[in-house]
Image 1 (cartoon, one colour):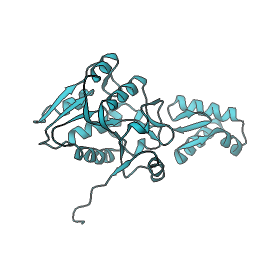
Image 2: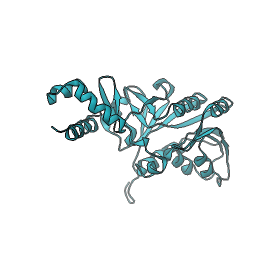
Image 3: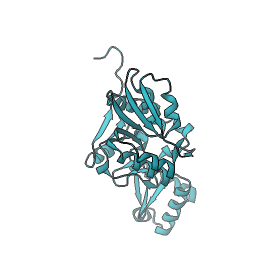
Image 4: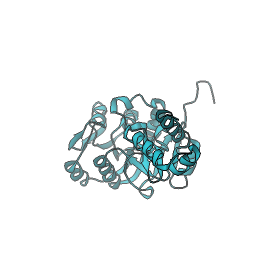
Length: 259
């Protein structure tokens, strides 16, 4: 078997099962574990899998650039955004993380909502400029261009000065074993800090993030109130996740005329 064929098989197995054990694949293909591990290292360098001890897990497609992510799972993100927006009550203080799903939440907040939104996303802040009764506080810091959010020491210091009722936090991976992960260490630190300043923290995770893994851990299950996802999320993974955390699945919109 050629190297390209072997790597394609390994990638297909990770996509199908969500994980791969190097030892088992070596036995199945009658190859050395070193060969399988080398292939997995190369796939990980290409961003196509996430290496873990003994094998690999499915890498998150949400690691793509912000502009690209706006076209991924748009329907699912809109349903999650509607669910999240429905949870916000008048006179609450809300933290909105950066990312495409958080931006959808900002746009889904009802027009007459009276609330305060704290965000480190300039994109989210701009989306709320014309909202008549939402006050917006934008956290400053170094701009992390990949996600279009602020981060670094300045942002961390500013975050310590507030308390909020709700936090809607984005991640790039939600995995039963690896937990909540994202692709940048500084961004992970900001997300942890934001969650710790809020009474309730909800994770925004469209279907492609369920069962996926990124390099940096964000927080533990005990720090999360619930994971909000959509009906496209893999059922088996959602079932496993529910042993660790509350998972709320946003319903698909009903067709007109149906009851």
